Image (tube, rainbow, N blue to C red):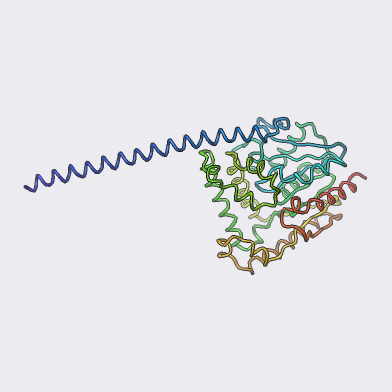
Length: 357
């Protein structure tokens, strides 16, 4: 066979291989498109089913064009306003709201993109959260004065609310509250783990619309790690499987990383009635409870450093008011309102009685 003929045949074979490769690639692409479309249909149908089962349609309020959940119960005043922590909704207050409603009016709500509130698709900083909450309360027919209660990141939000509307706030309870400067004061390795969580939420954000998160039960693990009762898991899972949850969580965590990485002076609260509830932290227990992947990157000394910094920051929060009082809750972890709800109820009642005088 001549060299020219061999060259022609080799060229023909290469062309054939390329055609087959192209067909395979096209087939894979079509398959992925079909799977994504099917996943999107599944996600939409399952979300609609969850909304029918769990969404409280009679508690939605229009706030600048988006629907937000506002759940107010009881009567009297001052009205207690409950602000949940990062990635959390009003369901975080399920074990205390009815008991607080026995002695005054109490409102919980879902921030934009969390729980059953619509997403806004943008990053909201504490001042914006405070203003949005003010509009929500006003549009929902609620009137000041307010007793603000904030858990974790919610503690920063309620302090932002007081800074924006000081005349509306007559008392405050901080439940294992975050501190405006904590990113700067934690070990760098702990901050890196938080950044890994943001990355996870970003991946979740990309795949949630096509049903990936729901299909592979990615949120089930998160729910199981929380101190919630069996009957509370289904409604919580329904909220976390909503398409907008991961995006809202990613934006909130990114916001806090940027917000807390800059030195900030905490606003003095004067003589505002204030109780700071702090979870007792044991470095060894915290380390033992970490996933193996996290343990490989941290040491007990790093955890001890974080515990020391957290204790100091809780003391600083207490000192913001001349009437500040700190209670270390030994029987609970970070979610005091879920693990020791009576402690939170009693703290709210104590501040309520001071504010109502």
